[in-house]
Length: 168
Length: 275
Ligand code: FES
Ligand code: FES
Image 1 (tube, each protein chain N blue to C red):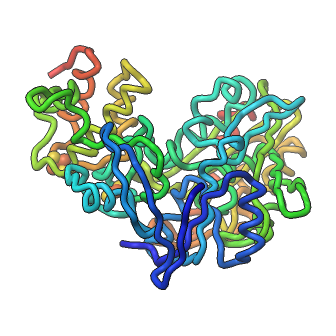
Image 2 (tube, each protein chain N blue to C red):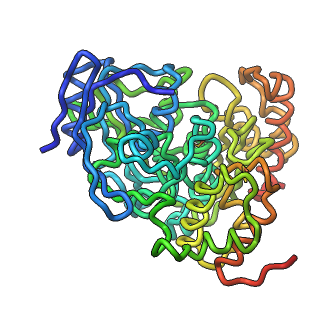
């Protein structure tokens, strides 16, 4: 049975979310945003907040394997579900995920602020379309803004991660 | 930005959600994907004291044939619409319009029922459902009723739904042989349309829906009447802005919007096979 309580500050909820394969649970306000849950309650600060208005994609994580903007989800919407953040991608502490490796190889980042969200969006994109065209990569990342790179090297990185040749 | 505090209830079924609405009246708000509601709550444009989360009512997530129609559960995501083979075969406009809503992250969460019930005149899908002559099924404490899309939108972010009703299904006609097109005019990826035009012509349907040309999603009746009288695409499009109340904002003046409506309607009609 799902429990919710009413208090002077509004409802609080007990939630349990599997984050990067590990169980987490906290007593949070119903209005807690998922990104705050991840950063402040769980302590995983790899997921960034850029715009806070579902425009920039810096806060992108996977909910049950699909990219979502965690600034626009309530933590309680992820109750009982699987969340993957940038910290959960790499197979081990000395090995990068192929998408992370491709961003590194292709120089797909400068300041790095957009990168966690960009990488999470890119992994979700390839899950749905394993061999995208360059145009499909550009369109597939339309929900993620980068103020540094001009996108070209990000697009190259995603194409490289999909195992396709990259033009210089 | 943090929403105002609220009490949360997770509905287990449509009946459960409707019972919550009946108990809390207009204090309560249904939340499907939450991708329109949560941003409005963060800006405190919406301050519900009870949120009824219908996001787990998975039996309302489907796309299936129903005689001459396609029946779509209200909780079907835009992502499901854009990837549906059934829609691609039988009603391609809807999947194509779903594909240009927001961005992939938004389409993973946003739902067809949510966007219709939200009744934002700037949203893409309401205009497509209007053009198709769709039917909306609302469930309330006393059962269900059907509402024609053409009479569903009643005002700015207002619909025909009563406080204790929930949208459960959307029906659109099969129209595999109709010409169709969606023109979305915006300046940046993932933006709302400054103006959008959805057209379907053929298979017994002549429908044109306009995005962002008034306080509600608009059925372009003057265009439809002109086409019925045999007008060319150019002549029918010339009346596209008639009877509209185009809004002014930072992106466009009403005059510019009226111009866009005419130009985009002509393009949409030509692409739909109107000479
Ligand atoms: S912080 Fe979530 S989209 Fe920008
Ligand atoms: S690398 Fe700086 S915002 Fe993308």
